[in-house]
Image (cartoon, rainbow, N blue to C red; front, side, top):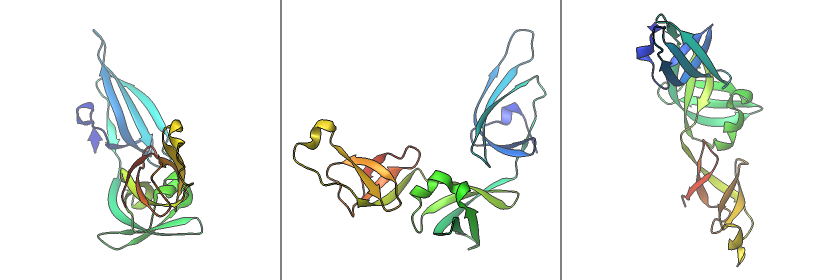
Length: 188
């Protein structure tokens, strides 16, 4: 299916030269007595690379990519592969650790994620905005430690190191922003 400039919106999946991209930003610049110029920022769905493409003229056409997103549950990790289960069909999928990348530090058992499929096979994992992680270890807070802003490092059960307030102890569950890796709040 062909997509014109008027049909563009953030999150739209398009295919350019056989590679699927997700639209991040777009703009149009019109100059007097010239065809408009379109600037589009795209993120490669397979690699995560961000690129910028410019198109000129009224005949800009992009093809919609065969990308599908399904809700899945993280089951376990086994020797460099992450296993997920589709919440509707109960099909299980194995995704290589290189595809999951740094997002692995936010995955806990039974976490709900979005799996992105391209031409029927899973190609990437989209995390929710926040993740609840258990603090595995953190140094104790001492009286008078507030000079440095009142925070200390904490290592979660998944290996993520987060700067947390002084009142957080080992065993507490904290909510972490998956986009920035920053502490949000204490859950328990």
